[in-house]
Image (cartoon, rainbow, N blue to C red; front, side, top):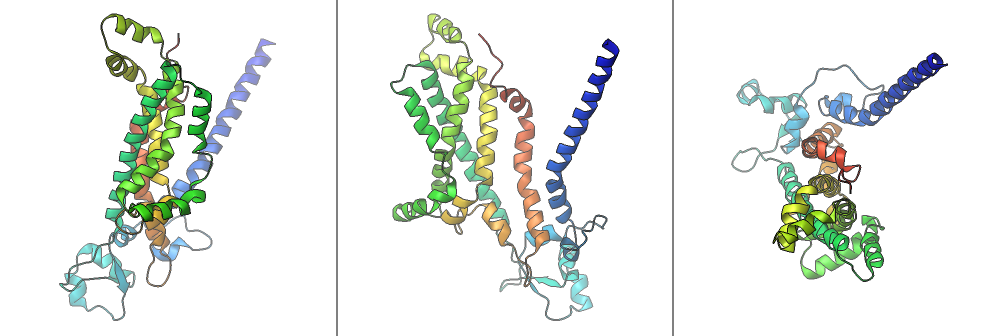
Length: 319
């Protein structure tokens, strides 16, 4: 009987491992597809059946950072030889780089849009996590009248999708002069994420024993000193996990960024789909912009992976 149970257990483990591998491949397939498309020639990006084996090239990334125009006349051998190697890649594809009146290459707005995403996402994440942690500490450590109603009200701000309130927010922002500004999107993303931060951080702080703070208060610490020297270090796991989720939400947000920004504060998500070639949608350039856009989130999540894995269990400190 024990042998049968052992064999059944091994078979169950193999089935579970196989299921995990299959699910992982399914979830990774879009990332593989967008990454390979970013290195494909334009003619292979929409080929049917899809081309799996091809010679990778970085032409889409060169196009992503430059503005281009249709090549209306053949390029002379002298001009082609004098062009830098990255411009030759564009010329080989039947396009030319756009130039200003001084003959300098005109670069695209992708770097500025990428920088806008970094500024807005990082700042709003810091504000949301800070405000959420302080608010969660108040709810966790003090008796607040109508606590359940207040927590529900905070949570209710996340019940509507952004697209529902985007138009009212646009009219409000236009009236107060916050439309197409960094501070406008930072305030909006902070307000949108702070409710999530409050609920998540409250779960972590609830699991930190109050006796730690009481002992610190007996030793002469103030409430603020106990918060910074006792609670925050113990809640580091929760803060890291909350920061990851808030950063991902602000980094990927599309509806508000599309409607409330146009040029100065536009982020990368609404800018990337607007990339077109000479007369048609250039999917290789869109894929290249998407691959670069994925890197900050992947790096940030990787750096905090240990805290994130522990944080999913809502803390490890028990009374």
